[in-house]
Length: 254
Image 1 (tube, rainbow, N blue to C red):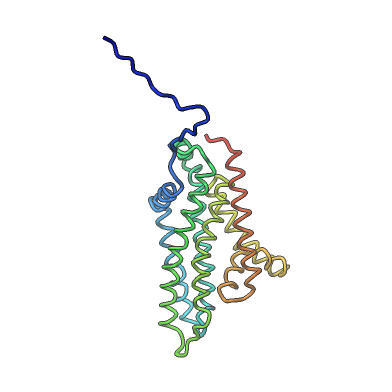
Image 2: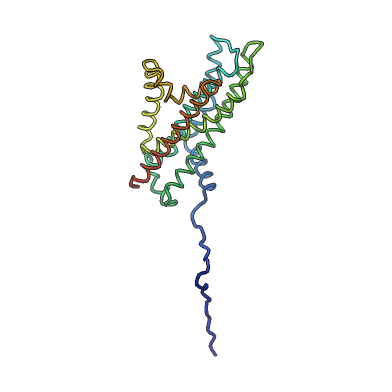
């Protein structure tokens, strides 16, 4: 006696559920956060982002008095953001510089998903590190400021500091993805933002003020030129992200 086993096929027109085999965006974001903090360079950048602002305020307090909280917090927002540019660059360009890009895109062939995960990861990290820097900076200002310290605008200054941490990290990630070279990306970014743009602002103030993200961050934290500052920062995020996405998709993985 024989038994015939038959498998029932789905009827025509039926919807067949396809299981997703790749990792989800949240899991990739968690992985990228861990990767960013697993290297010595990542830890050094994170530590620098936390202590740069408070340390700068302590040094400045030796020669100056703080009477309005938002003024020094604007400088902290700018400094913290500039440091966190490197966090984004290392996250993306570091894959190509250290030759790990093949493994990354072999595990997750969808480059857009990987870049999105990296951008979200460095944005979250940047905001978190900036939050610590802001808290320490506020403590320093409260300790060394004048007796009748003006706290007007401190909430906006703090929020802008957190936002700057996220924004500059995403900008760095976009430029890093576009250049695929850590050294080149860091050199171009810091030379342009800290060297070229200040000179442009001296010779052509209108042009410099219209494109300088560091200056825009400081003004925004101090409650000045808010709309223009937001547009400048948003423009940097969009341009750098689009450039990184486009060039990464055109570049062969090797």
